[in-house]
Length: 251
Image 1 (cartoon, rainbow, N blue to C red):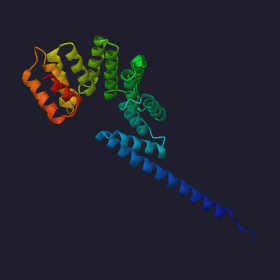
Image 2 (image 1 turned 180 degrees about the vertical axis):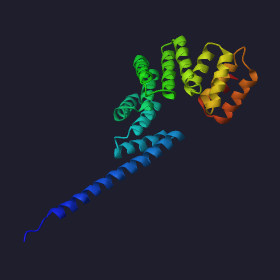
Image 3 (image 1 turned 90 degrees about the vertical axis):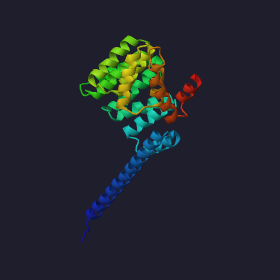
Image 4 (image 1 turned 90 degrees about the horizontal axis):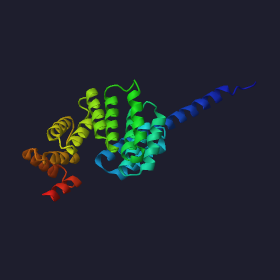
């Protein structure tokens, strides 16, 4: 009597498939856990541990676009521009419709690599031209174009793009802050104040935004009471910031 080996082969195949699936699930779970930890450490400012966690994420799952994007942002923060660009490109390669990574990469080209500002503008223009990027995404791209224009010292074009961003999204924080900053440099105190107040109504104050408030209100037509309020908030909320040190030195 001849015994069939097919049931044994089938059982072995199923077992191997289950093991492969189990191993894949394990790796994905470990990658996800490390990614969440990495983001948490980034938000708390512990960039060294954040780097370790995000690199471990990719060790378990290199096809994780969000992890590549986060790692790119982190490397950009610590001025490791080569690895930053590599991870931005990898994130976009893995997820062709990853608008956030595309926005980050375009901004990186404009602000971190001044000689490549034209490349950054080209990337932002692609985002604007894509019908899938309506509303907030297009507004972010126009705000980015405004930052690029400022980088190449074209304030008129910058203001045009930034106002276009606000047409699409009146609460776009990047555009509001950039217009407040631009107004301050042009000594347009009332305009700068209005944009900064709208920015603070949209998001929490930062050391940079409070210092900008101080600069706006120290103009000859500024509000001295507002200037004091910005200064008090800056010193109380961000006592160890560079902006707080500048404020103390200016007194």
